Image 1 (cartoon, rainbow, N blue to C red):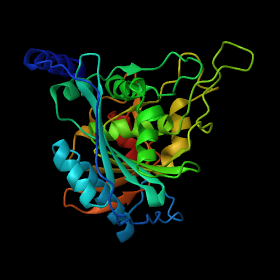
Image 2 (tube, rainbow, N blue to C red):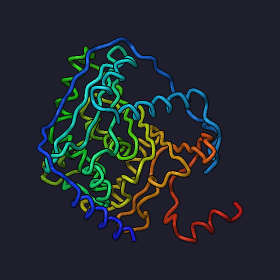
Image 3 (cartoon, helix red, strand yellow):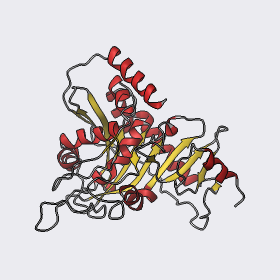
Length: 341
């Protein structure tokens, strides 16, 4: 059924699309005063029972709400969004990558706080026909490792394509560092990075984490064979502090890389260990997007991170989960959930 829906969506998009000429775009905003910030209070670590829910603190709610407001402003036209971000106290710039079909994909706002050595990347969600085309490209893709190339986690082909476009345009290696230099960021020392996104933007934020930190494929010493990726081997001074997601679709695959058997390198588990505690993922119970796609299919996608639920009655809950349920649509998974623990 999913394949038929995907094919129909692609056909519809191909009929209605009008391809226009585009080039990578970088639009800067003027420096402004220091913004207000809210410090995150972690959930009660003593409450470790799986699938236990409790109400988040006001500080947590404040962090999530601010992230949601940033994601919302990213949907405004560029000039209005830049103005709104500056009003909140950020230095602000906008970058739009150019795809091979000459469409701008993806699009990201860069928000700077030089006095705190912190930058926020807000990835724009679905707006154009080309964004919709990327959404339905659910086939799993992985890289062919090359010495020195960025490590992009295996997963959803359309979302990975967005990150590969940003890499090809030099966004992480050249444009972002140049922007922060213009804004007066310290030239040495670590820079904290917060990644924010809604829907398509959330998927892009998930995949961005190891790229931002400069995780790369490196050959074995004295060999032309790539070594197993090490997500702790960071080659940039950017350090991800939080990944704040809203309505994140499936982006990460649980399947191993072809070059490395799972017992040697499990890409999903490696990502989870490196970034799982940094991800704050907010999902409404009545939002179907985070559930689209079949986790039991051959590409096997899975969510990751701390899970915040908004119930159908608009109650926010934090829910402890390890995201380890396999084939959640299967009836046996329902039986396991109903059995007395």
